Length: 442
Image (cartoon, rainbow, N blue to C red; front, side):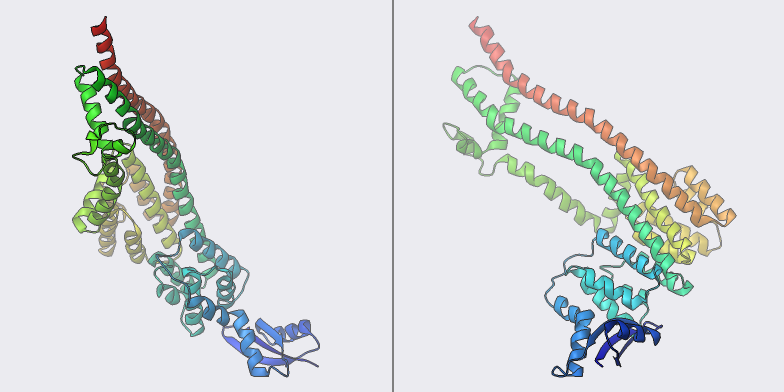
């Protein structure tokens, strides 16, 4: 009768190894399960390979072999994407709900991942949990993949013995946040594409078409209106040395200018982006831009709604998961992108620590609508603060959708008017000298 070497997990999730004699693979599995083990790897021993070598090969096939293979050659840049983290959380929630041990769940999900940061992180988490660490502690050692919000909720689930439920709520939270972000991005694609195409068309007219009219005006030696002179100067600045390459006869356009103005036009958004990013890394700079974004016409209202939706959902999810209120407020403050709301939440933290209410500091900060403050106040009075916060988040998610749709509807006519005005001004500037020339001939 053949002998099978196996690796399994016991009821506590600890790995076990051993051998068992059975007529076939199915009988071996049944005998292992009857001993209270959950098999993760099983293979028949071959006499010529030896028991120890066979066991090592079987284990490599399960988890440890993958660790060695993927860990050494992968270069990790940045963090784990929210999409991959959300999918992992949902899958882990499903496996825990099915009753699988946590080590087995981690092993399954680790094997499913493509080489990258998440796979390497799960290998480390698997090793830490195998060594006796809690899941939340193992996650906390990998902040590039699991932020403080994630680890605190996992810790609350472990303490309360409801890890499967917490994972389900965490997955739902990540999915709703991802849907909100995706809706905003998808709504901005159309106006961004239209603005980009319009800019390319206008630049093409200025660089390719206007120089042809300049040659006509030079041939007739006529006085030109101020608008036409400004257009010609702008065309020369944009084209610069490019005009000689694109057909300028005398090459005078690039005598005083080596770098075309269009290069500055294309590079200026990049410079502005990095300048703002560097300023935001400083305390005063971040505070200035965070406050500025809240008062930008049209966009400011959208930023307010999106920020309120995010922080109320985050706080509501943490409180619902059993995280202490002071810790929940601190975590929410740290994960809120806008510094104005982060400061308001820290005021809430200080108020609660002193025994005062949650709603009053928000009311004084004037960063939330009165309706939001009143709903939080009611939630405090009734003891259903978490449910009220999640209700606010759902309402503001809908308001964000409406605001995004309204913004897109507003941008369309604005883009048409602006583009029409620019093209119209170019046409008028080019034809004014021609009209004046025709009048002088007549």
